[in-house]
Length: 91
Image (tube, rainbow, N blue to C red; front, side):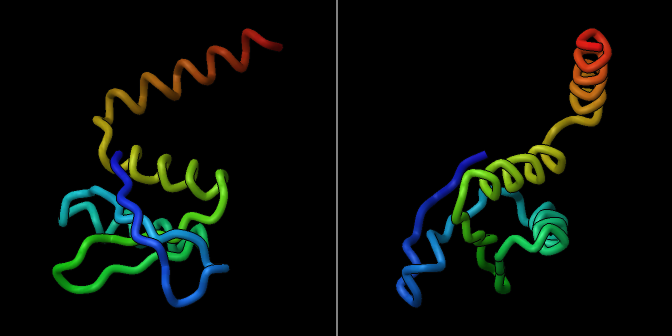
């Protein structure tokens, strides 16, 4: 996932706007999920998705949402199995 910075000139307290590198077909799905998570974002017609990232937690959530959309299903299944295996080994 690539982020591009564009400093928000409207209000310095809002943080930094980042352009999220997703295909046009994935953009709406990412946008909807980020809205569900109350992460400030916007996209206009024929423009890239922009997200306001103000802290590390939001950055990780954005990374996770984009990963879920872009990753192959089998990769996500393997990752989930690995996480569950590690969790039960720790018990």
